[in-house]
Length: 291
Image (tube, rainbow, N blue to C red; front, side, top):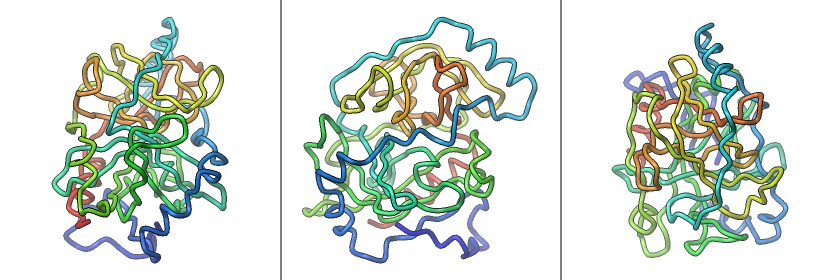
């Protein structure tokens, strides 16, 4: 998947997104690229570094520091969830993967992940393929190639500095029978402009330390606001969890309101951007892509 980074947005389009164009090669080539050997050799994306609150406010930083003193919440391994999986991609010649989730949309083909899984240093990932319900090296639903999407411009234009904008929405191709990924595996409802102070569940495929990345893990607990644009959840999930969904409530059927993007600098909390105006624009435009 290549992005036309030089093309200006149309006059009618919001300025809060950067489009990711369809790949020049057939989408099926992307799936063929990810042989079992290449998937096994790919490494988890650990993000641009340990995070602190990116709200720009002193109060936000203090809230993050105070919250980080709480007892760590240990993630539990759970059975695969049909609409949560891994997204594989190539960045600067190397294979990587992140966590991702199918979100309910008009086109039935939209997934959400972290912005840094789609672009780093204004270089876009290629060979992006989503594997829902990933477990132990594969998916019962196969690979779904990315055909386009949108990343928030705060992440892209900020050269990875604006962690409160670290979100992306991508559209995947239909399967060989013409079915959308949403019709096959289901999807999470989406909500925007939500409060950070409620019970949430974070999901992903951590692969560092005590985790092996081959199984889905979950943390559930109260969220804490980090400034006005980020959420902290006590959780020890590590590299590989980036892009995983943060869902309202204590189960896998809640609405997605954010995605995991980083860990705080204590390693005891996962941090993610609350989906607000720019994420809403990126979602709307991706949900309108014809697949």
